[in-house]
Length: 303
Image 1: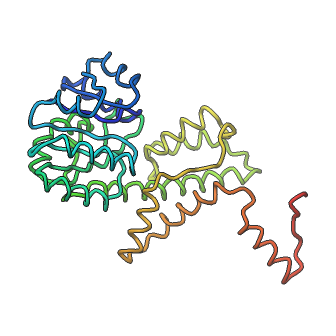
Image 2 (image 1 turned 135 degrees about the horizontal axis):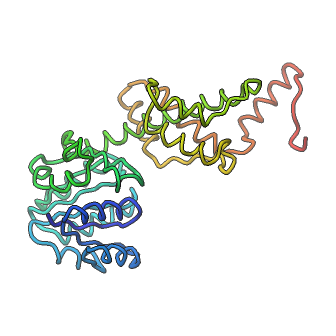
Image 3 (image 1 turned 45 degrees about the vertical axis):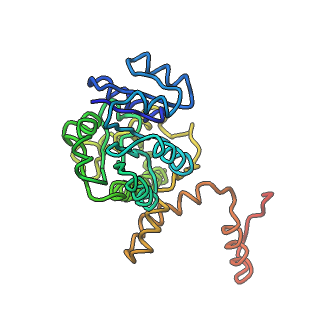
């Protein structure tokens, strides 16, 4: 099947490579010409603009957009809407906010253009293992593009999963990422508790490796953590600064909107905020109050 791929960052580039390996006709575009050149060297057809990409595709066209959520996604989909025609399909594989996805789908539908939102998980390992896809939008458009999804998904998934109407694919991926926040935080706290029991001299690497087999808490996250401990037993090469890419915040927002409690996910998000602070005001305020009402010892900033 023929597919246009817009956005050749690490994930988008790997997705294009996986499609090429399976014999698909892939036309690629990225503002970075080196990224385009790399894929053309592997058999893709290159384009130096969205217009050139669209003109190289046979009707009905399918264009996969794999760019960061926000303004660049808005601009890219807006530009494609002016170039495509009735019966074509735009697939947003990034982590867009599902509310924005619903709005974009409604706008494209006015021109008869199908819009599929594909929640995409798999990270840098997707080229080798395949991507977990949750897809929202018109079911007929999903079926028409299923050869693409079948190639990108792991063999066990056989083309990802059509979960519902426009926006549902990104909503499911958003909740997936919220769960990921909670799981990661639980593992992190557990490892810190293990290390804190200094008199036992616990070696986290072998413990993590042991948990990978037969344990009820085994997971791919644990597999990846075991690899990290094997390379850096005390993780001394890393800072404790942890960023967030937005999906955790949106998940907490949804929890408030729906009045569905999600305390673990909310606290995991808050811990990421805390990880970026050095000697935060809140902590200093706690120390000041404790000193004021009880005369308890405090540490001065220059201690």
